[in-house]
Length: 82
Image (cartoon, rainbow, N blue to C red):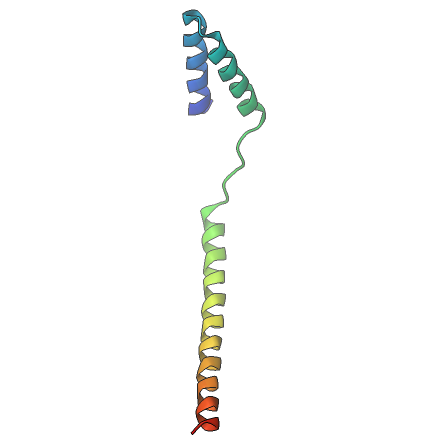
């Protein structure tokens, strides 16, 4: 059981005897929902790091190409407008 599920069980057990059954029923519903629909698994860090490294390299290459194009455009403008 996860920490959330344990917390919900504690709320259910404490609220029923105290007469706050509405909260207990809501907590029970939440417990059932969480049990049937587990949260999605997180991606592995290694996959994420590798994909970010590849994306970073592609962006650096694109930035370099843009810098070259920008420099060539400046040179062309200087040649046209002496």
